[in-house]
Image (tube, rainbow, N blue to C red):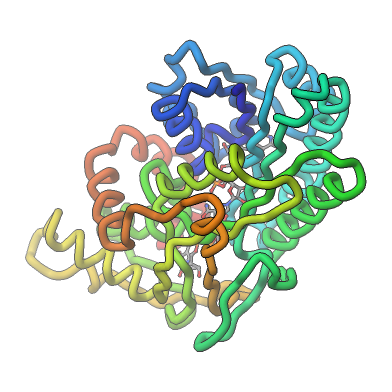
Length: 351
Ligand code: NAD
Ligand code: DAU
């Protein structure tokens, strides 16, 4: 297998690259534009493998993508490259439409041209796996409902609308042109190498810097959390065992309010890295203006992936969060340059 991974220098893409190189015999072709969210140091060890190659390319560049598919003789595509941060999509949606929607369109066009050139056997083996989000399903009430693969799409933010549009394009390329596509929709990931604009790494690092921990609104919004290594394992199963035309929901069965997530981070840090003076990190929690259009709750029914792919998460939220905090405590060399770059005045500077 030769798998073209787009966005392999990002948070989940880098976990996929590490997983494929460390735990399978597949070769990996990483295609990444290296935006603010891309970081090759997240895959330094995997990149030393002779089964790894890298192309710094924008997914909107269809000709370059087609050329890479041909010259690398790719057998599977795992398409993760995207603009991923909801708050940034509210401040500036253009990049989200360009990369998530137009970029996916370009990827599909390139993949279709390439697929049509393959032998019959190679066409049967080929897969285009589009990695998407539970946010396409929209807003759930606090006390009822769960997303299945049949839940109608109702995206709320520019980010989730761009992802929903890209999911529809992928389905259309299967339905109309026969391209063997699979889609997966996953809940909130967390774990090592998570860019510290997202809630969990932001809170860990702000706490270590004695800065306020910003909780939107009342902190009552609920997300389902999945440890990123568990997601990477699921994605390998989807791309190798998923049925063309199907989609698979992936989740951690770990719904938490945002406030309880932040409090749990504080409590773990109180034990692992007590504050000077003995106060709890909880004292740093501050409630700030809510995110516009903030979806109340997401919840994922992942029983199809469990039943059909034999996948189950290994980590609980408590075990995964503890490992994540240990990783941030041990890997200042990874996050220090990011914190010190120019993000202090932007998203990271909520404090
Ligand atoms: P990320 O922001 O950490 O990484 C995105 C990567 O894509 C970066 O390496 C970036 O350089 C690259 N990229 C961006 N635009 C590009 C372009 N035009 N051409 C080539 N490369 C480009 O994102 P993530 O959190 O790792 O998410 C990866 C995928 O998983 C996304 O498609 C996202 O929608 C989806 N997803 C994320 C989560 C989550 O909790 N983070 C959950 C479900 C689904
Ligand atoms: O559900 C899957 C999605 O999870 C992915 O598709 C997205 O790419 C990924 O970024 C993530 O989106 P969220 O918006 O849920 O993640 P974020 O970490 O930004 O926020 C998690 C929750 O915490 C959300 O309800 C908003 C809230 N929050 C976030 C930040 C950054 C805060 O309360 N304070 C904050 O400072």
